[in-house]
Every structure is written in structure tokens, then in C-alpha cells.
Image 1 (cartoon, rainbow over the protein chains, first blue to last red):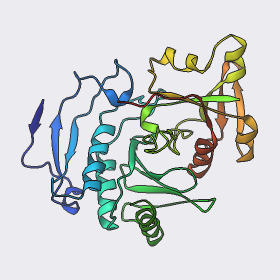
Image 2 (cartoon, rainbow over the protein chains, first blue to last red):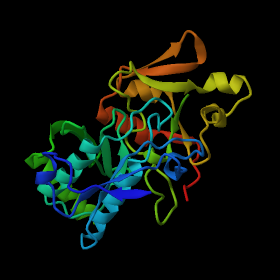
Image 3 (cartoon, chains in turn purple, cyan):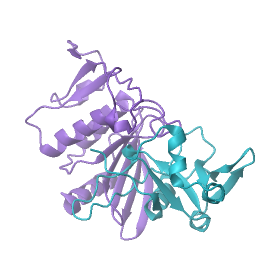
Length: 172
Length: 120
């Protein structure tokens, strides 16, 4: 069951995000949740993000993955993790937009505290971003057998933008 | 040897060539309120005739979940410790809570004790 909400709720975040994205209200509470991996999980998700069909495939894939992650309820990891917060998801999209990222789509999951976790790569090369609902970004970059980590904001920094360019260069 | 459950959301998609499923770097990460990473003590399970699947069933997790295993030596090699729960000998903690880089090292160096079935 999906119902549109117009006009969009007042949210300072939305003004800085591409108009390609709109929020929808939905109720998944009665539906099974294949992403959870069990048949009994509740899915309290009340929002999804819509992506314009003309957007690049990697971006559509990212938004679809965010919406799947958003259907996971509290305790999605069985160790008490929190469900994904909408603001964290919006900050992630904002960061990818600000950095002019060109793909590929990351693997997406909630982080343990309700932020969002994005990951590219596999063993020996990878970039991980954890973004909180307040827009703080924790970065882990593994490259050439070295693992570096630092923090920044959803507006990113040159080091993070360089890492994202490396992802595009190696994986796109 | 210690074990840690890994939900489908913390697994990267299967490699298109090999089919290998790799855990995300966050598999050994904690909430900010936790004192450490909750783990199962493999020796205690095995002594009771139980395998890694016993980590999943009580939690209602299906076969799309996996169980990672890693040695205490590997945990100590990244500057962390393993403590046993005095009230539950099958349970323990990796502490202190690992920062993101150490969590990634643990996640990527761990092996599957129970390989997850790809989610459909």
C-alpha cells in the first residue's frame, strides 16, 4: 500500500538534494521481509526514496538498495542494531551528489546505530562509508594492503572525494 | 576459535564469476552503547556436540545468514582481546569495541564456519 505525500514535508535536507528524489509514505508492516532473512521479522519502515527513471543506472541501483535496507527493522543483525534512519539515507545521497560520484552502486545496509553503511570493492581493495543521521561520515579505505580511516561530514573532503574517484576508476 | 552471526545485509553480493560471498567490513562492528562485539565460543558449542548452525536457530535466522569464524590469535593481532561471559560460557566479547578499520580487518580475514545460502 503506497500513498503519496504532497507537498513534501518541510525538511532542510530536501532543498539540497536533487529534485529527482521524492519521499513516499508506505506501510510494509504486514508484508514479509525477504531482506531480513526470516519469515517473522516486522518491517516498520514508513518511508522510501524515489529516484527519477532518467537517473544513471548506478544511482537507481543505490536508491533501490537504500529502500531495501530501510525495510529492515530494529535488531536486523540479531545483536540489537537499530533500523536505518531516513536522514542518514538522505545524507548519503547528498554526499554522492556533492562529490559528483559516477558509480558503481555500493552495497548498502544500515549501520549498527541507525546510520547507513555503504561499501564498494571486495578483498584487498575497498571503501566503506558510515553516515549518521547527523551527517557525520566515518571512512575506511583499504588499498595496497593498507587500511586508513578518518571522519568528515556529509559534505565530504578532498581525501574522501579522491577515494570515491578511485572506486570509480577501479570498479566502474 | 570464535563465531559471529552475519545477516544477509552484511554480506556483499556473490562474486559474479566465483559465486563467493564475502562479508561486509562491518560484520565485527558494534553499536555505540556496546562494550564489545558479541561472539560465540566455538569450543563450548563443539564440546556440546553443536556446530555453527546452533548460532542461528535460537535467533530465528534462516540459511541466508552465515557464521564467521576467526581465531583469538587473529583478534589479538589487531590489538583486541576476547573475554568470556562468566554467566554463559558459550558467549564472549571482543573488546574494546573495534574502530572501523580493525572491524574491517577482522571481517575480511575471517572464514565462513557456516556459509550463507545466497538470498533469492
